[in-house]
Image 1 (cartoon, rainbow, N blue to C red):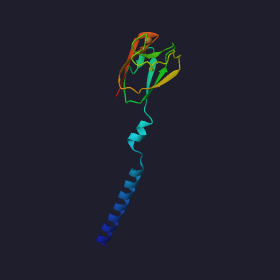
Image 2 (image 1 turned 135 degrees about the horizontal axis):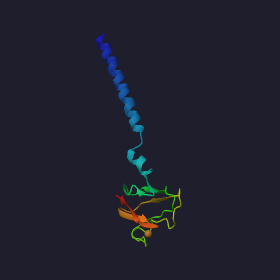
Image 3 (image 1 turned 180 degrees about the vertical axis):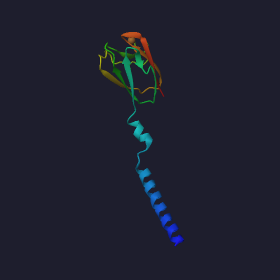
Image 4 (image 1 turned 45 degrees about the horizontal axis):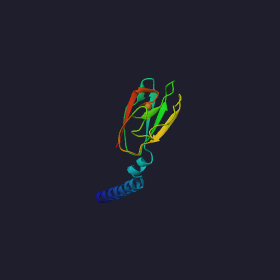
Length: 127
Ligand SMILES: [Cu+2]
């Protein structure tokens, strides 16, 4: 009688283990899931860029959202030429509520500023 109970328990355990293994096998690999959805955001408010310092993986798309009432213009250092990373520049101001997305494809520590108010600064580190 005891042996039968132990045998039944063993069978249940084997079935449970097989089910867990099968479920795990069907899960997408974390690397695959991340590579297609690398997103980050920077808000532009009266107090500047939030966060002012951001660290991202290469290939990440950063969306700059103007939450200020005044126009804002995120752009690569140095002001006014933006030559460090020329593509990191929407080439026009973002009005209140407007956003601009840029995909960083070069590793480095990219300093930037608000072109309309160059003392407002931030840094995006691309690894
Ligand atoms: Cu500038």
